[in-house]
Length: 94
Image (cartoon, rainbow, N blue to C red; front, side, top):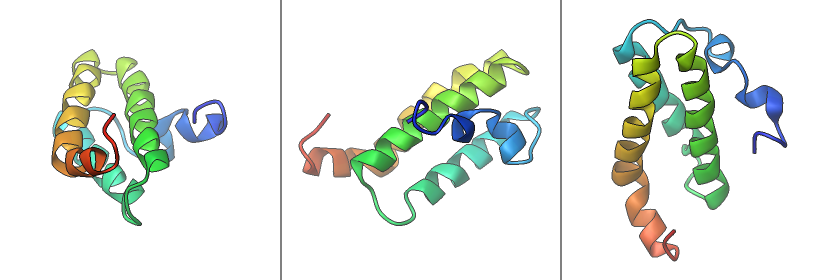
Protein backbone atom coordinates (compact mmCIF):
# COMPACT_ATOMS: atom_id res chain seq x y z
CA UNK A 1 0.00 0.00 0.00
CA UNK A 2 2.76 2.43 0.91
CA UNK A 3 4.54 1.74 -2.37
CA UNK A 4 1.37 2.25 -4.40
CA UNK A 5 0.33 5.43 -2.56
CA UNK A 6 3.44 6.87 -0.90
CA UNK A 7 2.05 10.38 -0.37
CA UNK A 8 -0.94 8.97 1.49
CA UNK A 9 1.24 7.36 4.15
CA UNK A 10 3.81 10.13 4.66
CA UNK A 11 3.47 12.90 7.24
CA UNK A 12 0.19 11.53 8.57
CA UNK A 13 -0.08 14.10 11.36
CA UNK A 14 0.42 16.94 8.88
CA UNK A 15 -2.21 15.55 6.53
CA UNK A 16 -4.69 15.20 9.38
CA UNK A 17 -3.76 18.65 10.65
CA UNK A 18 -2.95 17.76 14.25
CA UNK A 19 0.09 17.89 16.50
CA UNK A 20 1.45 14.78 18.13
CA UNK A 21 1.69 15.94 21.69
CA UNK A 22 -1.03 14.31 23.77
CA UNK A 23 -1.48 10.56 23.76
CA UNK A 24 -5.23 10.80 24.34
CA UNK A 25 -5.59 13.02 21.26
CA UNK A 26 -3.52 10.69 19.09
CA UNK A 27 -5.45 7.65 20.34
CA UNK A 28 -8.78 9.32 19.59
CA UNK A 29 -7.61 10.36 16.14
CA UNK A 30 -6.28 6.85 15.48
CA UNK A 31 -9.65 5.30 16.32
CA UNK A 32 -11.53 7.88 14.26
CA UNK A 33 -9.40 7.27 11.16
CA UNK A 34 -9.69 3.50 11.57
CA UNK A 35 -13.47 3.78 11.88
CA UNK A 36 -13.56 5.90 8.72
CA UNK A 37 -11.46 3.38 6.79
CA UNK A 38 -14.01 0.70 7.69
CA UNK A 39 -17.09 2.91 7.31
CA UNK A 40 -18.13 1.20 4.06
CA UNK A 41 -17.48 -2.29 5.41
CA UNK A 42 -14.53 -4.54 6.08
CA UNK A 43 -12.44 -5.97 3.25
CA UNK A 44 -8.95 -7.40 3.19
CA UNK A 45 -7.75 -4.27 1.38
CA UNK A 46 -9.12 -2.11 4.20
CA UNK A 47 -7.51 -4.34 6.82
CA UNK A 48 -4.16 -3.86 5.07
CA UNK A 49 -4.86 -0.11 4.92
CA UNK A 50 -5.44 -0.03 8.68
CA UNK A 51 -2.07 -1.64 9.35
CA UNK A 52 -0.31 0.62 6.83
CA UNK A 53 -1.92 3.67 8.47
CA UNK A 54 -0.85 2.49 11.95
CA UNK A 55 2.72 1.96 10.74
CA UNK A 56 2.88 5.38 9.08
CA UNK A 57 1.47 7.07 12.18
CA UNK A 58 4.04 5.28 14.35
CA UNK A 59 6.83 6.60 12.14
CA UNK A 60 5.49 10.14 12.54
CA UNK A 61 5.16 9.70 16.30
CA UNK A 62 8.77 8.49 16.62
CA UNK A 63 9.88 11.97 15.65
CA UNK A 64 7.94 13.53 18.52
CA UNK A 65 7.18 11.02 21.26
CA UNK A 66 8.46 7.44 21.13
CA UNK A 67 6.08 6.41 23.92
CA UNK A 68 3.09 7.19 21.73
CA UNK A 69 4.66 5.32 18.82
CA UNK A 70 5.06 2.23 21.01
CA UNK A 71 1.41 2.41 22.08
CA UNK A 72 0.14 2.40 18.51
CA UNK A 73 0.77 -1.35 18.24
CA UNK A 74 -1.27 -1.83 21.42
CA UNK A 75 -4.11 0.30 20.02
CA UNK A 76 -3.99 -1.63 16.75
CA UNK A 77 -4.22 -4.91 18.66
CA UNK A 78 -7.19 -3.66 20.66
CA UNK A 79 -8.89 -2.31 17.56
CA UNK A 80 -8.30 -5.59 15.72
CA UNK A 81 -9.75 -7.59 18.60
CA UNK A 82 -12.79 -5.34 18.91
CA UNK A 83 -13.63 -4.64 15.25
CA UNK A 84 -11.86 -7.20 13.07
CA UNK A 85 -11.48 -10.52 14.89
CA UNK A 86 -14.97 -11.82 14.07
CA UNK A 87 -14.70 -10.76 10.44
CA UNK A 88 -11.23 -12.30 10.07
CA UNK A 89 -12.47 -15.58 11.56
CA UNK A 90 -15.50 -15.63 9.22
CA UNK A 91 -13.27 -14.93 6.22
CA UNK A 92 -10.75 -17.71 6.60
CA UNK A 93 -8.50 -16.34 9.33
CA UNK A 94 -5.12 -14.77 8.98
